[in-house]
Image (cartoon, each protein chain N blue to C red):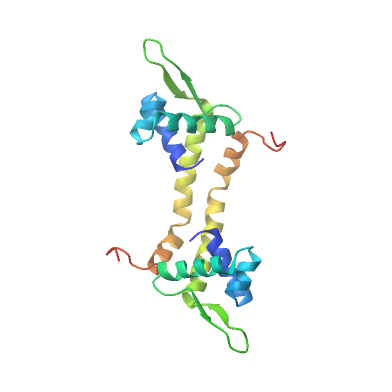
Length: 102
Length: 102
């Protein structure tokens, strides 16, 4: 898992569509499907289920595991960011100021 | 900064030598120097200073900023790992068991 896959899961939950989710991230249909296939393969049970075609044009939903993984990933991001905030802030003060583009 | 650069800083502090530090990580002399140059460039002040040649064969030391950056990075790793431990543990239980190599 990483930020790209988490964003894709979130957008699939929002849009009900793998292709729409990918499109919202500037990602090809093929790439979005590949990422879903990778996630479904690395987790014990699928994170996303999809149906093709039909009057509604198919659709995709997060499974219970998909929703849980997305929740845990977001919580991890938040907790980690909070936990490391002081160190990151001080590291930032030690970095060269590149805001002028030099 | 990342784990490789932090490890390199730590080994430079231990060995007093950029090449010995790189060697301990299975890294070429050139690669180790490149990483040091990158770190010295992205931070406002150098993290490593080195002297070449001489009877002692030159040497390298972490500057005050280098020591501080290494400390902050290690602290960040520890705090982040602690903060995310519960989520990571649960995510791990949701992953496919690949321990049999399949």
